[in-house]
Amino acid sequence: MNATLSPPACPPKCHECRLRKTGAFTPVEPQVLDFIESFRSATLTVPAGGALVHEGQVNARLFTLYSGWGFRYKTLSDGRRQILNFLLPGDLVGLQQEFGDLSAHGVEALTDCALCVFQNDSLWAVFAEHPRLGYDVTWLAAHEESHMDDNLLTNGRRNATERVAMLLMHLYRRLDRVGLVDAAGTVAFPLNQQHIADALGLSLAHTNKTLRRLALLGLHELKNGRLRLLNTRALERIAEYYDTPPRLLPLL
Amino acid sequence: MNATLSPPACPPKCHECRLRKTGAFTPVEPQVLDFIESFRSATLTVPAGGALVHEGQVNARLFTLYSGWGFRYKTLSDGRRQILNFLLPGDLVGLQQEFGDLSAHGVEALTDCALCVFQNDSLWAVFAEHPRLGYDVTWLAAHEESHMDDNLLTNGRRNATERVAMLLMHLYRRLDRVGLVDAAGTVAFPLNQQHIADALGLSLAHTNKTLRRLALLGLHELKNGRLRLLNTRALERIAEYYDTPPRLLPLL
DNA sequence: CGTAAACTTGACCCTTTTCAAAGCCCGTGG
DNA sequence: CCACGGGCTTTGAAAAGGGTCAAGTTTACG
Image (cartoon, rainbow over all chains, first blue to last red; front, side, top):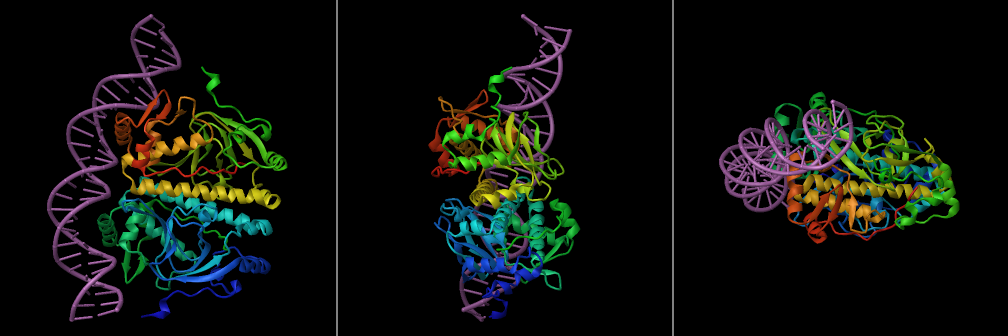
């Protein structure tokens, strides 16, 4: 219907990368950028609902999500699913698998996605030739782990209301960082309630009721696939999640 | 009382490191080992219950746990605590904090601990001078994240019985890897039920009842601070947690 | 339009939490 | 040698938060 809304494809040159212009990422020398570009082996688009990585797949790819949303997940044999985290533009994905093993989790496209895919098994070259980039990759991995820490705290110790508030705040802030909040203060929000439930360790029904309650209280508004936060203070307080000074992220 | 049971202190030379003789870690060239030793700035012991890192501390240290147990945790303002993971001998700790921010989590000694502490702010040198080690550090970070993935699945989607089975299996296997299972098939188990509850996102009372039920079923035995698994098969099946081929870990 | 997916809502049930009280183990001090 | 006290474990009863099930209702879209 609206080709205009489908996400922008990766530019042929990393020098033209939209993401680097957001100011959310650490600037890199032109020559390093050339190296990154040479390290990139392909660009790829995946339609909404498609698999970026299959659960149990061997030798999965390493890539940066250029546009669109995705999520990592694991499932139990009886179908229970846990969404591990959501992937937004600028996220480097696949470090785990890159390290030899079969992928212990799946990655799915939530919307149409455009990816910058890196050469298989060549991560080592990054470390050998550009230690600085290697350091950055480690930083990213450590940073991601601390996200997972937050997530675990949320799933293990917060109640339903707190969890939902947490998720809304967290996603909104991440999107804000990469310039995806529009003039009206809304962000695209392609998750359905099942996704939210699976990310928060709740049932669908209870997620709905909780979400509903927060909306009724005037804390947020969710319609036409867009999210607006109406009372950031209250959400922060409920989730006990206060802003951390935004800091520049490495981007590969 | 029993000085014999307190954990061995770090040897002065990395070449004499007990851990490297377990066969659980990737062998390194003698000269690389020299480098690691030069990178190590101190050894340290911390008594059981002591803080290795305070929650919110800035500029925390990077270290490898040489002996003893610890755990990383986060707390909410009303005291709810989530244990993020347990630290066993050979674990590298502090990558997150090393990267500038204030530590978002605390680290506490569960038993007396001996640590090999690395020079502050010198991680960069590792990447610059020994890209291979840098690569290993990244591998470790990625590996840890996949542990956190498992943990999140457990907290979000497994029920109490499954969670407990998971924890017992997981710890036992990790201890086995570093040679800490004794001839009788038991391992030291310094956790109390509150620790287990906080790691699994359960209440103390329910943790007790669940643990009790599993013991009554003859799946495990826990006494005198030692754990023995009596029916690994059943535990595996309950937790849906099957063994992955043990693979060599990098050790700094 | 018509159909399927996604969202809502209510009723009921159950796992887990909360609260409270014993019991147990052990080290300390009398 | 025994009494006392504190930490940890065990149990039970009652309450609640959240899960399950089963409709409706709305929305998206072919």
